[in-house]
Image (cartoon, rainbow, N blue to C red; front, side, top):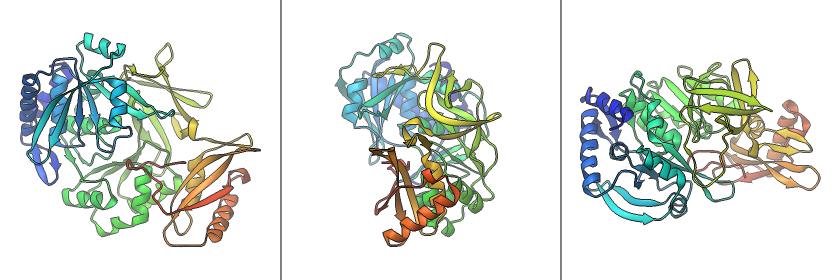
Length: 449
């Protein structure tokens, strides 16, 4: 067993009666976690899964899925997490990575089921990890061309970041387990001997119920989810006083949403997080609970800005893309493609280069306009994006979801008037669309198209 896994395993062994998981109202201790890791390791090796082979693990958060991950890492396997709501189709993903085995967890009988599942793909990066006898982790992002981009990590390197004792905390893992942020969350909670509280779905209702029932202290979320929480007012029906921290990331936070969250949860510390699948999740410190300025870095990370774009050098960086050119330069710096502003040690994330709207030669950041519109009466949500325009290059479009029905002309007039009062004229939306469907994905991220 490698050192990082061994450290984590021994930490679990040392606190066998501490509560590790509350999963579907079922409590699992760290003693039971170590037993599950041992049992699954025996099943994995007796089934013939050899070190270095690629194994799909199908499922979302559960004590069993987490323990399967650690048992496979102990066996030096390369893990491919897949959930029912993956950002890419499984067949397309496995064409990129290849596969040798598939593990499913059955909630009905509480067992894992192991099957040979061969998809050929001889990738040099995977072969290099095998030769190093290191466990691996393959994650996928939906590439801009529509083809999934495979991201290979050395799982030793990922886990090494958590070999620091931290105070225990109870938290709901919001991001899914096939997302780097989801892996980061569950390792952060368990390495501190905290309690992972899972929910059957990531709806506002289910999350509020879980916070109240299990006295959850930490809620990691996206700005889109927090905006939905505000709009729903469901939080008014639950006792959420146990919350100590709300962290947010994965997309730009509109200032108006942050202001409302700060007002509603005045007793809670708000912390912006920043991370990428390619480099890991950086340590962060917000300038204040109501500020979108954040200091990022920490041990193992360096940052710099070139032409307004954030670059990161990370000791926890991926091995590489399986099917795409690297965005690392020769010195190991990664181009995040995130446009930022700088104020001393603090950054303000403005948005991905691909999301920035160029209208008449002027750069426009969607979150800035969204923040103004979200402050208006009867607006539940808004997504701002660019649309091709023959003269301007791009025109600004605002897709709006209303709380109650209202005429299109009334909404357009109110939105344009509000934007022209506080923004430069070229930032006011030229086109406004009323939507009757949510403006966020299954992963609670804004859909800007």
